[in-house]
Length: 264
Image 1 (tube, one colour):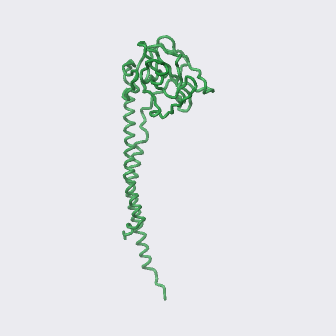
Image 2 (cartoon, helix red, strand yellow):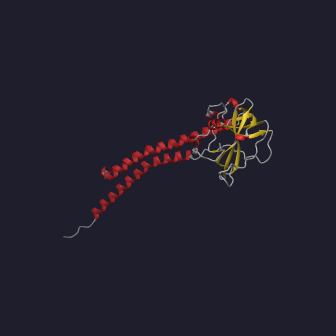
Image 3 (cartoon, helix red, strand yellow):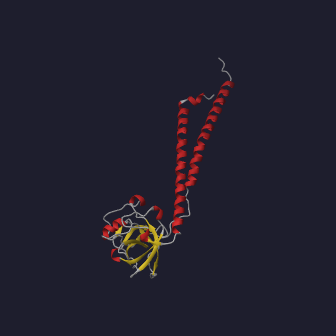
């Protein structure tokens, strides 16, 4: 009664089942690895955010990428804002994750003559996106800023297309290499995401960028378990189908055997 397993239909069904099981197992491990990466990322952010602030020159230098292990580290820098070369970064969301506006990116001339980029925060977009927006004035004189060290943005890492032909003093990415070329100055790699200024500035400053989410772990672990359950369910489903087919065939045989003979 199991010879039906050699039929074309059942051979194809069995081969498909054998093929999808390892695929589902692999997808489960892929989601599990993403879960592990998210947990490791959260731990790194938590540890770096709680570290003491250090001079930005200790972690960043011109023409050098900020190591991933140092991103989100608190840093401080002393200098004067160069508002003449201030730019805004387009298509950035505010704290509600819905409002579209700009990041205000202002070069800070350090006491050693080099420059570090400071993301002073978010402002809403105005009505005319082709004009430079009204930006809250940066503090004048010498200031000491503190903030989170961030790596340069790239299209590959951020998914943001670096469009050309933008209005004057508007950019798509925060990138020290691009700004160093524009300024003709030595610019430290990465940038500072501002959290505090001394002396304290007046009211009306850009909205401070919020800390990254480092509590949630997402749904990757749930997806991993789901894929593994699917993989376990395939052989179970195959057995159920086989038993049902056998039962139906036995029932058909019994029906044929008890059917009355037709008189000649």
